[in-house]
Length: 117
Length: 112
Image (cartoon, rainbow over the protein chains, first blue to last red):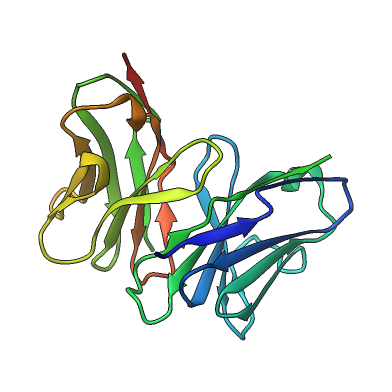
């Protein structure tokens, strides 16, 4: 149980285009989902916290107009990287917290590797 | 605010040897502490976590960690390393479940 999927697992796009990444909780409902980015050989950095039906909360330094987050249902959150540039190339990982479950545990997706040419 | 320091970005051990990955934390409130493992191009898998209660926590794959409040530490150990343990390990701290902060990671190499 408690499986989180991400789609796509990898994507290559041209500079200036937008890319949407989906994060789904497959066997549970998630009121809260989180988006992280990870640069090569570095740790995970929290980008934003997404709550179903409300606006995401972004960490300091993360451009909300560039990284659009939508959490329209209890099982799906999407991250759209708008007007992507090479510096946006990274590994993006989402996690989900089970509704009504232990508030201190997040279940992580397998990640999406974005390469912007 | 919470933060985590992982001592040693790279640890190398021989197969069968003790694994010790160090983690020290800083937290203004009682922390929740986690260890995750990440294999190449994959997400994070929870090894173990400390919330309350027993300070010695046992996790999957033979790993365990001990919460030492006086030392603000949560080191990860495994008595005998296996080749399949080679991966990146992250220590994380959270105060409220939302604000999870990760350490820089420790890459474990296991030599045959």
